View 1 (spheres, helix red, strand yellow):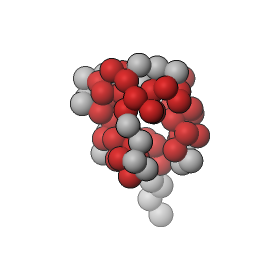
View 2 (cartoon, rainbow, N blue to C red; view 1 turned 60 degrees about the vertical axis):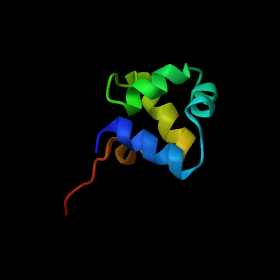
View 3 (cartoon, rainbow, N blue to C red; view 1 turned 90 degrees about the horizontal axis):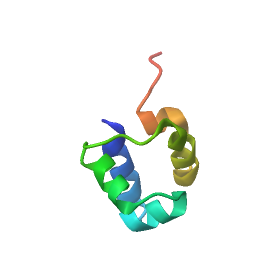
View 4 (cartoon, rainbow, N blue to C red; view 1 turned 135 degrees about the horizontal axis):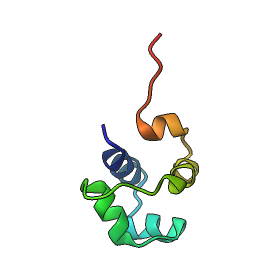
Length: 68
């Protein structure tokens, strides 16, 4: 799963609109739309902000899972 899909999944699960997410982290809703549609990626400096916003780890945001 790519990060745009993960953001969409997290946002929809929590009942948050693209505009609400964008306003909360100080970006445009168009940027969120571009991420979710695979047109662009979030700036790396937004990754910890997104993880904190959704209450998840950076690993979870990026879909990283250690294999045991």
